[in-house]
Length: 239
Image (cartoon, rainbow, N blue to C red; front, side, top):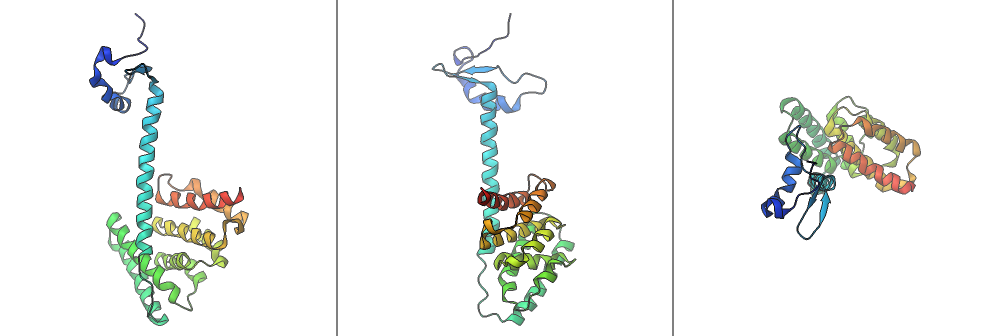
């Protein structure tokens, strides 16, 4: 007898309709996960592969929505930090130094995980608030520093106060950044400068440098999503 091409609820009962999604995803290894097509009441017929693709598409959309929510939450924590009114430049500089040390201590003393990331984001938020108040802040020197906390302070300053002149060195520092947390915010600092100067005013070699970095990043990471967001803005301006 030849293999059946369809199955209907008249033959197997209506209770099988709700199990379609489960069958699509949980078929036993080595066993054909269902018939080539499924016929539902009323005569509607769907190819198994089409249903499988729809399930996968919905799951992908749900994952992207969760990731977008996490991204918005992280940036909101920075945006909600109050301004630095009433803080003098010398006080701000001293506070920045303490925050840089705090970041270093966190990296050394606390294991990687959500708790450490959250505390690092609080440090970044304070740096974004305070570094623009330091009048003689040496951004170029901070970007070239071997110390991760000092580099993070530079990213925070450029995120909060975008300065076009530092875009080339920021890009070079970002693509070679060794700390994942730092690299994430370096890409956001680049995005701030791009938004400030206009995507159409960014040099082509800068865009190419960022594009070349993309395949080097973990493809399911916050960093790659941050960089892709910057590249989308740049490429949309290029037409």
